[in-house]
Image 1 (cartoon, rainbow, N blue to C red):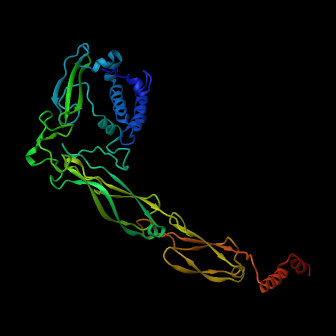
Image 2 (spheres, rainbow, N blue to C red):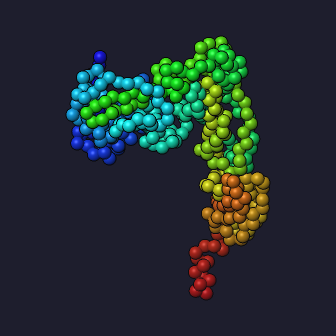
Length: 391
């Protein structure tokens, strides 16, 4: 039998580490090795090891017993002073319920993790987030799914409707998700009485020590199936192609996420559906640039238009509008088209469009053009200015 690793070494903390240091170490390692984040072959094993170490070292009395007797303090066959054989009892309710024990707590590492971080996992979604929610004994909540949808600039700005197709797990139509060949095949687990957990109690010199373990007979489901459904082989779900229409609201941006409830995988053994998370990838525009709800555009104008003024047509996200260029406009001047930007998400307000004019210098001139520019040059030359200034 392999020797268990020292709990302090597992958490990489000193033997005199404070509770806060132990908590901090567990947080770091639990997030690092959680199977929903780390898909490595040893990740789940390491996750369980650090959680077991945290369960012992975070409890003052358990830690005291471990410091004095090591792993033997929790080993039923070790001959621990004051100890006795484990007593197995059906666990119903919260850990420690129904026991006059100085020790309590979880032995399921995922329950400890949820207790530590709260009811919602730090890993809300992924390709398949692997959420470990449980609706009732024997059923498991379906996994969330992620779908990446590409949109054009205009589709994101104006909103659109798309039809998407993907594969997901759906309830087996033969057994209606139960996983059983017939209703009489689903039976309450006789070992745990339907709770999915077994509690064992050991008497030590520090008092009674109770731990909760997943029932090995039903794997924590609380029910066993005598005859499996021949279609889904007891899972209650089958992979199917799924199509649905999705409405993209006006004003979504690149990287936006939209959640569609119950459009993910169906849960095994009658569990509820997970959610679908739509991740939007918005492409750029050939000449419009978006910043928040505002749109920016550069347009070229000629020397004549800049000097004499003009009315030009300017594209916006919806239509083409007319913009008045005043006489004497300089290159780089920016004009604001109020309310011509993108509508704010879930709002009636709109951004603006900003149009910057760039005065273009002609690279080729006709003979007539050269004559005109030479005349203009004489009028605008520094010599002409000083002659007027001094009379």
